[in-house]
Amino acid sequence: MGDDTWTRLFPNSFYESYPFDSFNVADLDTVDNGVIQNLYKTIKKNEYNFLIGHFLGVDHVGHTYDSNDIHMKIKLN
Image (cartoon, rainbow, N blue to C red):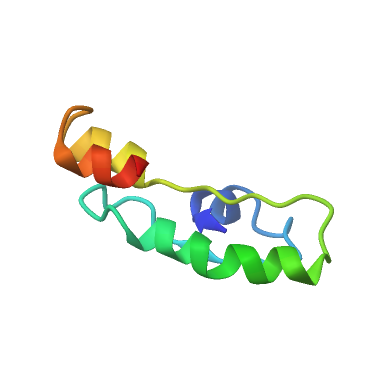
């Protein structure tokens, strides 16, 4: 769940997936919100051997702003 690069690189490797577009570095929230939206319900189902929750917000803040920007503080909190 999260970064859609996983499903593009390994298209037939996942029983269940929640990919979100990862190339819009100005979008600080969509991928992270998608992971959060699906993470807890997936954990509760307990039907996995391996789970990937790939958040991108901090990375996108770094590419769009810088590490000292208020957006970084918000993301880290």
